[in-house]
Length: 288
Image 1 (cartoon, rainbow, N blue to C red):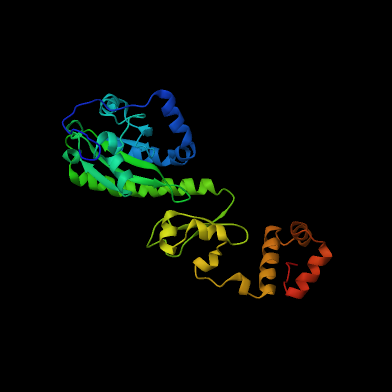
Image 2 (spheres, rainbow, N blue to C red):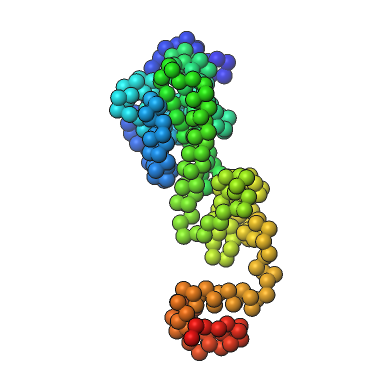
C-alpha cells in the first residue's frame, strides 16, 4: 500500500499485455522456453490432475508459457493465471510470481496471504529461474484455484517445483554450452545441480548457479581463465609430467581408432612412422 499505492479491496481485472508485447516477451526468452518444455510437461502431468496450472513468467512477472487442463482454462484465464497477465508486485501486491521475483527464493503464497482480496482463492508456489550466467531470467510457478487445496499440499508443491526449476536451469545451461564437456562436482550429492562446463584445455567456461555458490566462482574468474582442476582440487595438469600428458593423448587416439596405428596417426595429424616412434618412446604397446 505504501510503496505502490495499491488498495487490497480493489477488484480490478488483471492487467494484460497486448498480443504484440506478449510475442516480444516470448521471443526474448525463446531459449529458456525451449529448454523448459520437457520439464513443464512433466511437471504438469504431476500436478495438473489436481486442478493446478504450470507457468513460466519473465522478470516483469508476465507468464509467457502455460500448461493447464482444458476444463480449468476458463477459471485460470479469469484469475489471470494465463500468458500475458501481469503479476509484478507493483500491479498485484504479494503473490507467488511477483514475490518470488522480489525475494529471489522458492516460496508459497497460500490463499489469504495474497495482497488483493480478489486473489485469496489462489494458492501459488514459485521458484526463481537463473540463466547460465547466474542472471535472474524468470519464475517457474504452480498455481491452483481450488478451495480444497491445503497448506500441506502447497508444501509438496514447493519441493517439487524447486527440483523442477533446477532441471530447467540445467537444461538451459547445457544448451548454452553445446560442445563443451560437463563436469559433475564430487560434492553434487550434498549440493544438487553443481555442474561445470569445461573446454578442451580443461578451462572452466561456465558454471551453474549452484557451482558458483559452492566454489565462489564469478564471471570475472571464468573470463580470466580458470582451470577446472583448481576448482575440483585435482592435481593441475600443468604440474604433471609432460610425458604422462602425451601418453594420455596417444592412448585416447588409439582407443578411438580401435588400436589401428594408421588411423590414430591421421587423427593426431602425424605420420605413421612418427607415431610409431612416440609409441616406442612412451613405451605404449599396441594390440598385435
